[in-house]
Length: 529
Image 1 (cartoon, rainbow, N blue to C red):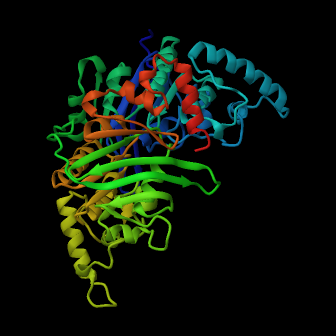
Image 2: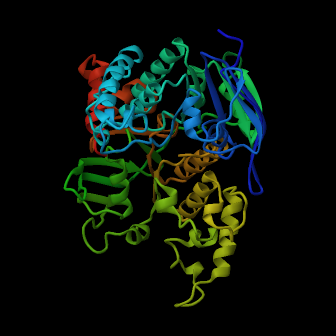
């Protein structure tokens, strides 16, 4: 291995107005290695990689590729320098084929046919060399997210990238798909490629990287050999204090049924059935976790229970059946029944981003008696005082009720939504993706709040694509696949491999199943979602 870094950034600084996103950052990434970069939201990871890929221009500092100072004013210059980037949100044209997406922007001339023929041959070679098999004639919208990710990697390799940057690559993958991705990355590394992996999952850092750099508040705080560190040490370097990486909770003591769901069925706007006879129950004093790949009916389940979507079937709260089809089937009637809802997408469904924090705290609860000055007027002062107290109790930073929701970090936005819903003392809390895009320190706090609500005897239905989160928070786990419940497990009686098979629609008790069969099932379920 060469002693010359594949990438060396020297003294990189970048400010956006008064915000210093990167401050005098220097980093060396050696060739033929997998180098992890971790840090909380706002630590500056994405800004740094955007500078390397030509999306931003640094205010100061230099970039060196294979020992030579290189100007990267735009992404084409990055590609010309041998850098490829696989974004967290894929940059693919959904109604184009795999082949068309790979060639797009890298055509050899005005005639497309020769470029497509060349790409078809090269894709076949790359697929064989790196375990990146994918049908070149498949339309992107019909591929699972795992296969779409392969297309993004193929795009970079087709453009002759020797350096690959991957931003949160496993966010929507099953354990089996994530394991396959890591085999691909190790294969690329063995062929001499250099990989930069941005992830918040410490277990992945420990499993797959050779070196890891930690960023905090725009600065590089440490770079260490992965074998010489631990998840606990990395978490402390990220946050600046010790962090509990496992949820601390006593065994559940569930009692009466709070939520009962029987034969729940939902069709989408195109008439496609998304929930296919779901039945489940949640008792007071327990957390039922719903595991599954995104797009297999979990969102529709939350929408029905939260009053956003009509459905067929039976839903009972504390033994009373609730309306699923009539005029009273709405979010307001659900709140009156003691159902609180932390939606999956806080920015689209949980908050009005241009509204103040105090206005968002009243969102959905504006008719509460303590918020009313008279029959016709809301007591804004009372709402602001209530918001201030919630912010203090939920450690929202900065604790300024008059600040617009869009000006808080993702983790603090999530805390505002949680404070609003949890402090209503609900009978049932519906919570979707509670820590998506949230700092590791805020994750610890959010988990503690959910467990505290359970310990007060409340029922909690948790939906998360993070298996670590499902395993550590849940008292029972139900796995969804293609709109159905594949099975239930107790966390202490299962593992990620078994849950991953259920997430792919395969009963582990049926005997050995090939990786190809798992991939085909996932592709069939996720296609078109």
